[in-house]
Image (cartoon, rainbow, N blue to C red; front, side):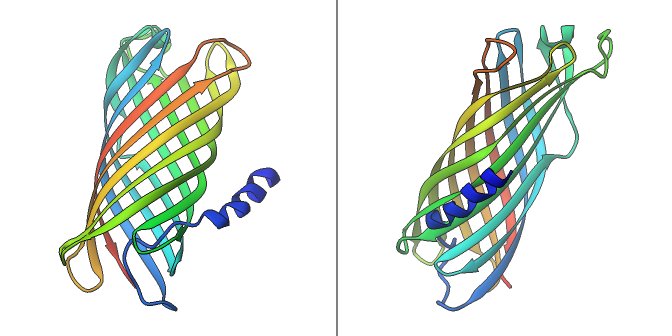
Length: 241
C-alpha cells in the first residue's frame, strides 16, 4: 500500500486539465451523476459471458486551474442475468461490475492535457439455478496505475468535444470455488469521446462513449489468460459550485 501511495503522489506531475475554461484563482467543486449502459464481454478458455449492464455512478471534481482532482465510482443497479457455457457448469449466471478511479491532471494549454491516477475494477460472476453450484462465485479484480492524454475543442458557443486515451498497468486477483485465489498481471487501455454543454450558467450535461479493454495473464496458479471488453454509453449531469 505504501508503494502504491508513493507512486500515486509522483503522478501529480501528470495532472489532467479542466473540462471547461475558468478564471485562474477560482477553486471549483463539481459533482456529477451519470447513468451508463455497458456492453461487456468476459472471455476465458473455458467459456465466456456477454451481456449488458445498466449502471449508476457519480464523481466529484475539485478544480484549481490548470489542476484538477477527480474521484469517480460506478456500479450496476442490478445484476445482469446472462447465458454462458462451461463457466461453473451452468448456462445461467449473474454478472456484476464495479469501478473506482482517482485522477489527477494538468492542462498544458486550452486544448491538450495529460493525466494519471489509480483505478480499481471488479467483475463477479455468480452461478444461478439449476446449476449444482448455485451461489458459487468467480471474481476478478484489477487495480493499479494509469497514464494518458486528452484533447478538448470548443464548438462555437454550443459546448466542448473532448477525446482521451489512457494505458493502465495493474495487478489482478482471480478467485473461484476450485482454485481459491490466484494472483497475476493485468494491463488495459481506455478510450473516451465526450460532448459537454451548458444548460444554465452552472448546470451542464454530458454524453460519452467509453471503451475499456483489459487483459489478465501470468497467474501463479494456472497458465490461461482472461480478457474483458466493456463499451459504455453514458449520460451525466454536473453542477459547478
